[in-house]
Image (cartoon, rainbow, N blue to C red; front, side, top):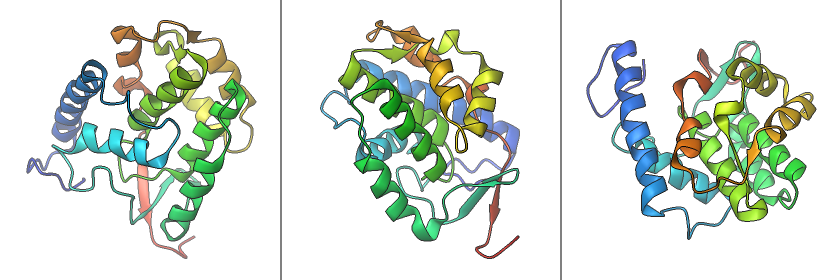
Length: 200
C-alpha cells in the first residue's frame, strides 16, 4: 500500500482513484499541448509526464525512486545506479523505429519511478515516435497479454516487442482516442515488490 496525498488506505480504492485522476491528467496533457515544447527521449520529459499524471496523488511524482523494485524474479535497475542507468538510456539513438523501441525497453529496465512507470513511458514513447517518425502506437490494436509478455521478455530479447508494436504503428498522431488507449489500466504491470540491496 503506497502512501498517498489522498489519505486512502485501501489498495483497491487507491487503484480506482489513481486510474481516474491519471486518465484525467493524461487527457489534459494531450489537449493543452504540454508536450509540444518538450525534448523527445529525455528523462526530463519523462519525469515531467510522470509529475503531471501523479502530482495530485503521490509526493514522489516526477522523482526518481529511492527503493529497489522487482517483478517476480526480475529486478529493475538498482536505485544505487539509477542515475547512471538513466543517463545511458538518454544517450541512446532514436532515429529509427528499432532504436526508439530499444530505448523504450532500456528505460523500462531502469524503471525510474516508484509507481506509474508504464503509463508515463507509453506517453513518452509515443512522444518520441511522433517527433522522430510522425507515427504513434495504436494501443487498441495491441493485444494486452501479448504486450505484457513481450515486455517481460524484452530485457533478454526485444525482437518480440518490436514486432508487436511495429504492427500497431499509425499516422493518427492527433487522435485523442488512440493516445488515451495507452494508459488503459489493462496494460499495467502488477505485483511489484520492494527489496533491500543485497537481498536474494
